[in-house]
Length: 308
Image (cartoon, rainbow, N blue to C red; front, side, top):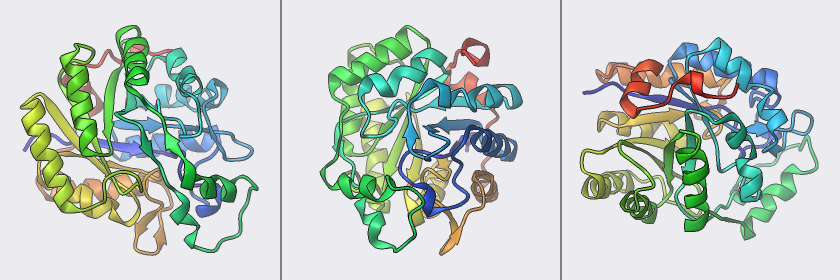
């Protein structure tokens, strides 16, 4: 099999500080955990920012600048900035930092969808901040907006004007057809790096059958012009990404996707998850791809092209 890409999503915008003391919140902790994850074998670092005082998801450039320069200086990992931010942010808010930093890669959600996090309230806990519980409660009426116009805007401003390539996040089958639509319009070029997302309420369930079907449809739509990676939420993380690795796909770990390293056991860091999946994929006979190999595979512009 070909080399395998390990992505690590360091903090995200879904989990709240009360859920784990190991979730990195401030710039120094995000930078430290990102450096550790890169040294452990992650060739892509997927990045969100947070307000360092409240732990709330943030799109502010100043908060991204709290860790992006350190990651650019201390690692050779590909820095992949979120354009999703948080579902409660406007498109302009979500794009402010990526447009300023002009990263090598950026994530792009391929459709508008329900994004329900309120099931996380099922576990009793002491809340550290007054925003956390209402934030989760209100997701029973939350729509993540990414219309075709929004997608075209991101592809134009961040891709065509700033040279970023994309991790196309597909939460459902329809998102593959939306990607095909933009490929047919000439707004994206192969190879397409497609991230199948499982386990978010509002998107695909984390069923092995869904992964097999997504691969079949992607083969139909994109032939040999794509690479697929898999992320799965919570306890489904390791089983589903192991299946992806065995199928020749790529994998994503990180505290954005799951706070645990084993059933009922919190992961102490992002690097701990990277180490675990690296051991699994190497036992499957896969060789972990270096950042420079990844850059060559995806045709990235190189680390020297970002503003960090």
